[in-house]
Amino acid sequence: MYEILHISKEANTYADTLLAYGVAHLVQAIYDNQNIDEDIHIHDKGTNYEVRLDEPITDEMLDKLKYFQVIEYLKKDDKIGIPKDFGERKYFNYPEQRELKKKRKAEFDKISGLKGDAYKKAKQLIEEKYHTEGQKRIRDDYDVFAQLISNPYTAFLKLHDNFHNNQAYFKTLISEILNLYSPQGYSIKTNYKTLSKVKKIKVDEKVTMLQLLNPNQGKGLNKAKASGMSVGNLKGHWIKETMKVSGALNFGMICQTVKVGNSYDMKVFVPAFSEMKLHEKVNIMQTFKKTAKSSSPVKLDILNSLRIIELFLKERTKTLRRGKRVKDSLLGLHSVYQKDLGQNKAVVNISFLETPDFVDLADKDDWLEIIEEQKKLMNGITEQGDAMLGLLAYRHFLNGSNINEYFKFNYWYATYFMHEFSNKKQTYITTNKIETLNKIFTLMDISFKEIIENEGFQSVSTAIRKSTVSLQYTPRDQRKFDVQYGLAQKLQNKSNSKEDLIAFISEFVAKYNSDTARQHEKTGYSLRANVKDKELAAFFDLADKVKPKVLGAMMAAYGFALNKKEKTEQQQ
Figure 1: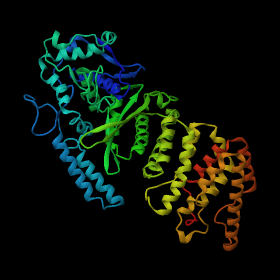
Figure 2: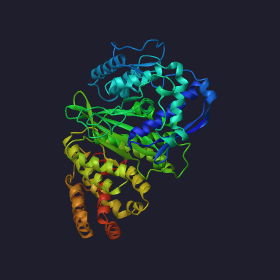
Figure 3: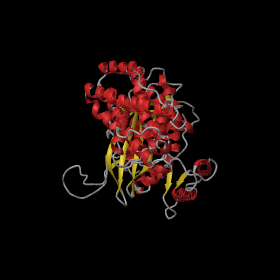
Figure 4: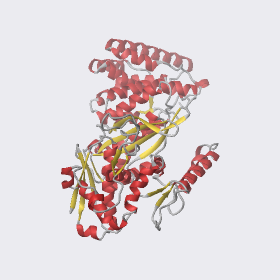
């Protein structure tokens, strides 16, 4: 009887995670085969994974087991076809799927000239056409299957054929897998006899380790001892490699292209949970795949981190208790960068994108609004030039829970927005929303509330805003004041000391009030409010309590943001 299965961590990459997912999906397939409706739980125990079964698998259950595909067959091309006696079993038809992808791209090319609602409507029709159940559609697992055909394909065939060619001994094969990960098999590790010697079953027990599933392994000078210089692939045990393939194909992995120059590289992402029900993981990743879009490398890390948190919050609302951090369950995303070398890809980076510490289920609705706004902000940034500095700072903030990196990002974004908007290089660029900033800062640390609610801080930030972004949204010929370019850089430079910051703000406010009064004399009415003496005094009191770098960064964030209902100078 099997109640708990142990999967040891050996690679310390997403290979271990895929292995655990694969074992869990094997149990799910056994449940489905026996019409059992029970949950399967996956737990990360640090040195190993545990797959816990609500309904134990018994010998009687295995005796009744009918053959099923542990991993779905992949038809590479029409020359190889499908195995003999395959029947009506499901398989992935790569040539057919590839043609559907080409047709879909061609239809998108035709509507590329459309704009606004016309484009959105045409896009929706195309997506519905190629992603509708019950007809030929582009499958959600296309991204993984498309990589398996060259990773290498022969290794995948051996893993599939181990089961297909031994259907009469299917119960024995499944028992061998379960025995390996049972507490007894876990304790003796690899000290088990081979099937070929004990059961007279012909299986390929050692197969090439696919680099897609084993990012820290690859073709090279792989020798147990330094006895030669021949180049070859590392071999892995068939059970482990089969489980990794199963884990990847069953919504455990997503492969996305990233454009770098004129070439397309690839990033691979695998979610990591400390505890999760299998069906919840599938639901999250199924939605993730359907809505995933390719982007530039750093921006893709950010968008995927935000998206997986968003989907987790929506999925786990009923099962997580209030006050529980998202990071306690969703650890983050494994991320692997593969460089395109022409015929093959090479792993150039293996990283882990941690879930931030400060996202709490109790504030679910607020965080969902924040994430939606942050995704819009990221989509307006073009990853080139010094934009890398800003995006890296934001990624460090998000995956390292470092508020100082968020301050760096806001300084950079204020300058970036002013430059891009004035040159009309970006039509989709947007500002931070003050309401969103309020939520971010107060949810991260309640001590920021004193700054945000200070009337002096609010008044000075408004003055900065009226001198920069508000004017940007006003047509040039209708502006009554000059746009203060370079204000963000000056603010950052003067925030190294309290004295410099106070002197800079004093000078800025004096000019701001003077320009406002001069315009009032010309027109007879005020287009913007002055910074009052009591407000400036309140700001100076705040400067005595708050570190200048923190205060300067907060002003950069709020001074270059907008209220949802804030009017531009033209509207006023």
